[in-house]
Image (cartoon, rainbow, N blue to C red; front, side):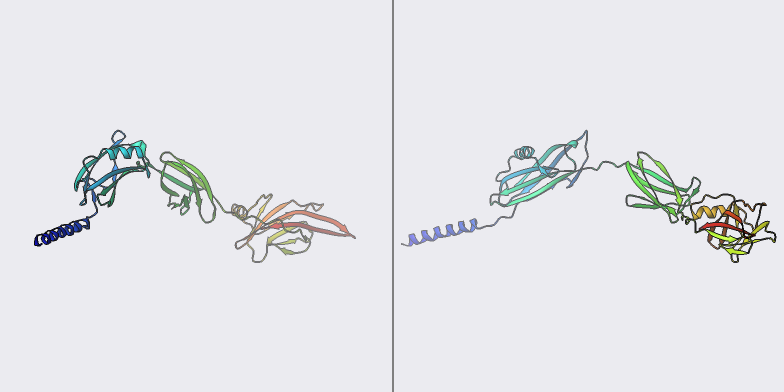
Length: 341
């Protein structure tokens, strides 16, 4: 009876030890890549990059499967993945295992990256994944210097003009120049400066180059001709910057600046559309303090223009018609004119 009890105790002990072993937890497998950077930037020799990476695996619960998946630009390649997986041998039931992952990548076969995913499953069905990535090296970028020379007309350079290409803005220096560093291609540009009309255009970069831009000053349109004004030339009249008077026999008419107005210039013709043109015409001549017009016997007068000025205000006066007729024995003489500013 004693012998039976001892035997039962021995069996129970063996069962207990066996149960403890079954409940033992093994650490998850670990994977490491030895002797290389990860990710690595590929340097292609003859258009091919040779992959040679040592993979070290530790699996306390012993290796059950080793799988390698190869992704090209994010998409798995099943055929190449199977070939890489089948090349791994001797891994089963190992707790400490190493193999060399070898491959050859053609430069033309991918755009950005190739990724190798190593997947280890141990006998306890614990899974570990690790990836090794090969990035394509960026192609060298060739850039060129493209300058802009901004002028008013063809001679006067403009400093402080802003030149915009895409979202990059540069300001012209004292020589009217702004420089950009650009890759080859076609670009749109815009040039702006206060007081000038904006300029836009397109240019192509294939080498170092320059674009000349001519800015046109902003202009202010002259007003339309005003209403017709009649003045009696046998009396003294003051209107629109000048004063008209005649000598006693009405053979001459004299025009002088009105009070507060400056000397004026006299023109025989005028074709101005902007205030700036009017100012330039005034400044191109020597202003006079009076203008005397002689009448003929029939009281006919030559057509003429005046540019008169007060401060920053310029007015173009067109003396365009003279009238002479008899009214009950009285001679009636007057001039008609219009003005714009």
